[in-house]
Amino acid sequence: MRETLAASLGNVFFSDIRAHLARDAVVVVAAELDILDVGEAIAKDDKTSVAAWIESGRLRKPTLEELGAWASIKDDRWESLVVAPYVLVRLRHGPS
Image 1 (tube, one colour):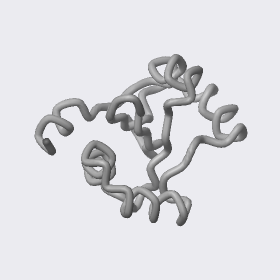
Image 2 (cartoon, rainbow, N blue to C red):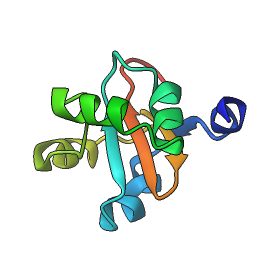
Image 3 (cartoon, one colour):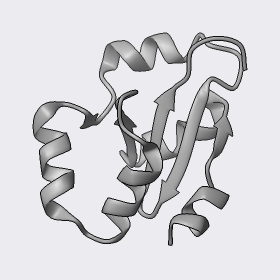
């Protein structure tokens, strides 16, 4: 499963996630978490891990402030992983 998820991991533009934001499917993954670990836990329905990340704020919906700031970024600063029906994203820092 991890290899399948890794194959769909990639960098995207804000415009690529707009449709997913409109259907409330975007989930922000904290920098300290491995996005593949999170994707695998969601795919395997690991409620304990997912609940712990949500409770700690390390897995959450984007805030309105973030959405406003993200709209102004013009390059591919998002790491993205689709784990249907969700799209996990993390804002990368530094050059693309």
